[in-house]
Length: 156
Image (cartoon, rainbow, N blue to C red; front, side, top):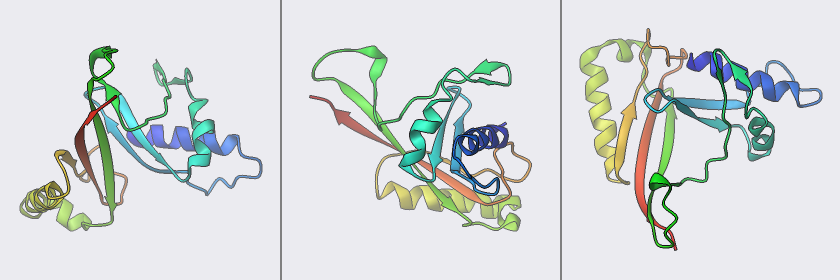
């Protein structure tokens, strides 16, 4: 489903850029969060954001998409207090780090995942490390490692 959504967003952007090549991939990465029913999409440039936001309300499969700009923070439970705590999350994606053989080998896979989490933890609070494997719906044929950081932010 992730690859279908990525293709859908890319096709939407291509259709709105005069002279765009079908070979151009405007979606650099897509990290779905199936638990919360959302996805973080990394576009080739910020100029494409306004085009992607026009997907708001567009039908995809059996749902309507909600497209919003992510500013890096979300208010907790809708509180409007002037000095509220919120969570900002940042996701980074490493490409081509592990071979297909590494992804299929449980020992190498779990060791790499642990090493990545440990190393990244020295740069911030790691929420999750996701490494799609061949056979997973997220696997695109290229090794991708998604690391989600969470930082506590106070808004004034």
